Length: 90
Image 1 (spheres, rainbow, N blue to C red):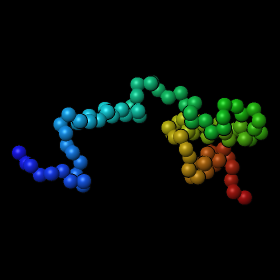
Image 2 (image 1 turned 180 degrees about the horizontal axis):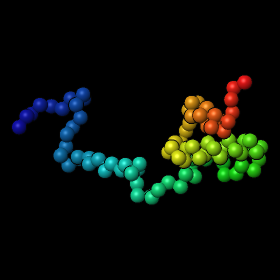
Image 3 (image 1 turned 30 degrees about the horizontal axis):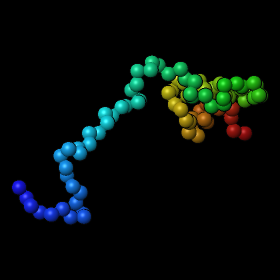
Image 4 (image 1 turned 90 degrees about the horizontal axis):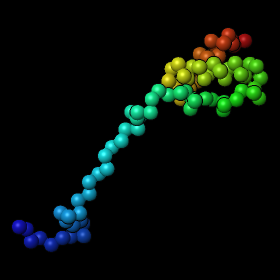
């Protein structure tokens, strides 16, 4: 048995104060069932205040997000959606 005094740099290692870490819960693999896609909406729950073209664009974005499992889109994906709707640079 060592009789070395404890220094301020080293904590005391008491055997009765061992902390057991909480179990890791992987929330990505929860058993909540398939996603409904509702959290992937870009433009709230209503397209009522959008123009017809804006509504078409919003629906296309939501459809793309749902089909590709994406929550956020990058610029290339937005460009792909716009081109899919027939828009071209003039």
